[in-house]
Length: 375
Image 1: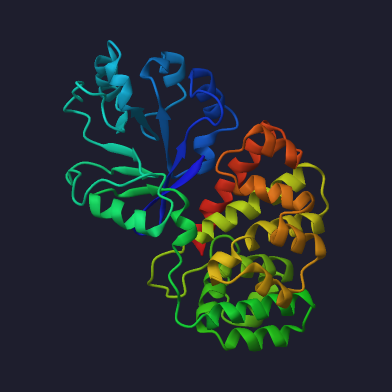
Image 2 (image 1 turned 45 degrees about the horizontal axis):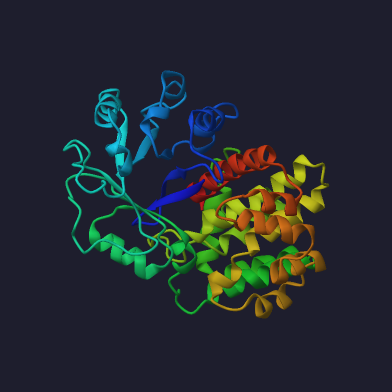
C-alpha cells in the first residue's frame, strides 16, 4: 500500500497491490474487510491494481464500493476471452477503470477505457501524449523528480513512487527548521517555558503553525488561543515535542504547496508507535518509536547526512543506532516502515506478523491523513 499524490503535493488516494502473492478475490476480501481499509483512509479513494478482472466476482465487488474504489486493470487482460465485456459491465456498475500498461500486440483497447495507469520506473511517455480531457491518469514507480516532471509533462495528474524522497525544494535559508531543531533540543533538556516562548517569538512561520494547530478542532475547547504561553500550556510539553517533530516538515510558506515528506514522516512515526503500543510498550517507549519514525527523514529534509544532524538533538542511544545504522529492535522496525513491500523476511527481522503490521499501517495512514489536513 502506497500513497498517491497530485501535482499540488496533496494525497488523493492510496495504491493497493498484494505483495508476494496474487491480487485475487481472497486478498481483496481480506484487505477490504474488517478492520475497514476505506474507513481508515477516508476521505481518500483506493486504486486497486488487478491482473485479471475475472477475480471480481459478486462477493468481491460487494466489498469494493464504486464510489471509493478505482480499478487499475492490466492491459494484458484484454487478450483473454470475454475481458472486454467484463470491463464494460464494471463501468456500467459505476466503477472507474484505469487501463494499466499497453495492450498486447494486435489487441485493441475498448474506446471507453480512456484513463491510463502506467509503471514509469523505467521510462516515461513522451510529452503531452495523454488525452487531457480524461483522467486523472496515474503514473506509479515514479522514483525521482526528473521522472515526475517527465510524467507530468506527458499528462499524468496522479503520481506514486519514491520521488517523494527527492521532492524537497530548498526553503529560504533553512532558518525556520534550524530554530525548530533548537526548540526540540530545549524540550529534550526540559527547558523553562520562557525559553520556549523566546524561541517561538523569533520565528513567524513556526508561530503561525503552532497557533493554527492548537486552535484546530484537535485541541480547541471553544476558547481561542492568542499567546505562546497559552499554546504551550494547552498542548502540553509531550504533545508540543511531538508536533514540533512533525512541523519540521511543514510548508514554510503558508501559501506554498505541502511538503510530501510530512504525511510520510507522520505515517512512519504513527506505525512504529502503534506497534509499540500494541505490544504493551510504556509511554516513553512509544515516544521513542514515534520519534524514530518521524526523524528517519531528517536527512532528506535538510539534504544533510544524518550523522551531522543527530548530535545537536542528544537522542537516546537506541534511537541514534536506529537512525544511523538501522540497528537494534527500533532499527529493524524502521526498515519495515521504510520497505516498499513488507515481505516475509522483513517482517521476521522486525518480529512482527503480517496481520499486526497491516493493522498498524491502517492506523498510521489514518493518522497521517489527519496530520496533513491540520498542519
